[in-house]
Length: 272
Image 1 (cartoon, rainbow, N blue to C red):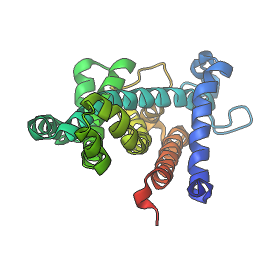
Image 2 (image 1 turned 30 degrees about the vertical axis):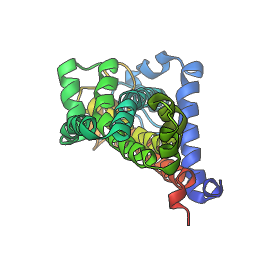
Image 3 (image 1 turned 180 degrees about the vertical axis):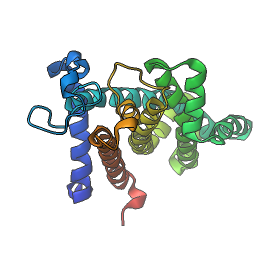
């Protein structure tokens, strides 16, 4: 627990907790109409007491759009990472625990997906399925599945060779009980750490897809969509890109820092 008390741990944890609270509580206290309400008389207004982050090209308040955009980013990233865990967990455990032909077949399929950059794979899937929220989750989830499956496979392979697992196998313990009682609990730290780090990349992927028009669609608030809409106004209203860009950068930074601290805490091999 000492690692969480470091500056890195406190900062990363604080950012993650803040973003989660914003994503969960924002829809309760801020109606969707606040993010879509247009005031053409105040379009491209700079930060002020009335609009602390300024307004966009349609006179919409950037504060409300960034706050509600956090819900979109966190929801899509969380659902996509959960999907990658649901698919990658059984693939990795079966491959690492049984090895042999099963391992070769499954890992060749995983390697095929790994041969494509994750964002390019997500972009291709999203383009084929069509741009909407559900398809964005599917595209990002599939794109990140091979990374998680590879890590789980390595951890399952390591645990399967431990003496206590060999002893349980010799005692006649079934494979299912072996996996549930011995393999799964011992690979959970790696899954938690990788899942946390994957959240950061999933948020980047969602922002990238939305920026290219293949993710969240108007009038929903999305950080990537806000950056895309600000391209033509950077010279006169740079805050329209800086505000959502800062939200993406800070969130990704916080998740990466929090993931590093989790790795130090949960993985005994990193302890000095």
